[in-house]
Length: 44
View 1 (cartoon, rainbow, N blue to C red):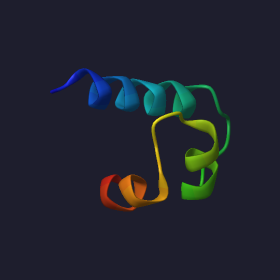
View 2: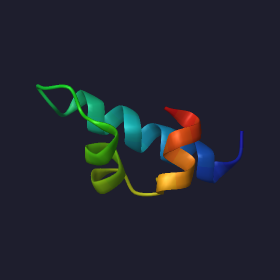
View 3: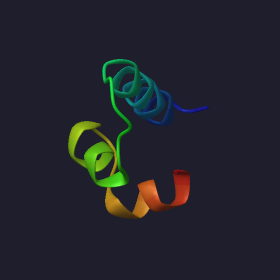
View 4: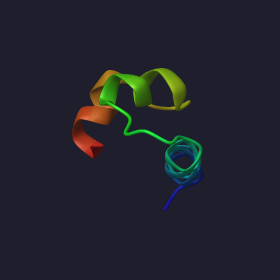
């Protein structure tokens, strides 16, 4: 796994752990660095 992908996945995990409510794709796109609309539609 390359560093960019690892960092992006860790950022996603941290964002999900830091919230008390479910996050929408739009919330994730806005709060997780490294996610763009194209990537998040493939990953999520």
